[in-house]
Image (cartoon, rainbow, N blue to C red; front, side, top):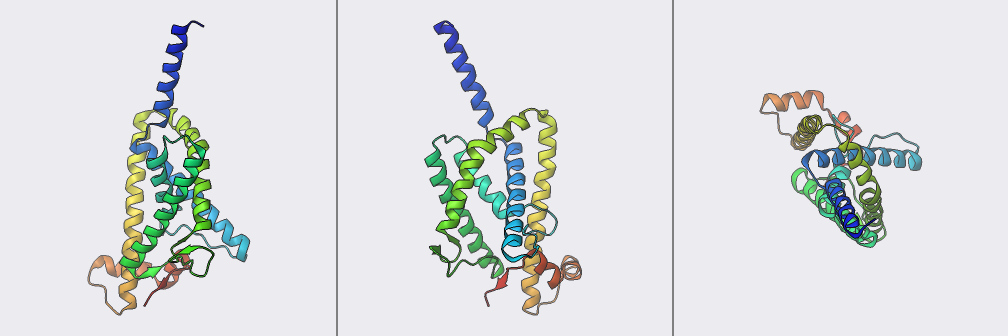
Length: 227
């Protein structure tokens, strides 16, 4: 192969790799869904293995996608999808995962006055919101996902017609937004009920009707009020 042909081949390969790692709304939505689903499966299986109890850990009322894992790995992909060095992927994956877990715990406490996970008393915990061992897990997960799973997913998505992919992603994005909005509304109303406040709107009445304490406890078995 001549030097000129090698140069063209190298440029073609670089262009293909650039396209493979190009981040779009559609790709990010599918990554959120996959990470959220894997997170639910992992946590549910872990709890079953440790306690012998089957407790779905999706932290949602209408979807199997755990938003902590979905948003955590979506953040990693946005920040690290072009990083190649495995040590950098591990380190920054651990850092971003820990930041995401800490921030979501803090936001839950601020908005709902509840906690769904509390690591106080565990080894190297950070204000009970995350721990260094869990951050190591996030780092390993980020390394594996971005180094191996993300390119594989992108190759699969590239085989789907772009218009169809965008259409599905739009509907999926709306579904995710509705899922998060409903979950937030139910938890806010749950906190209001606990403090003795009656429902003031039709939506609040329907939430009280369908999302009883037992229903909420099934989806958030570890959640407790701080006061």
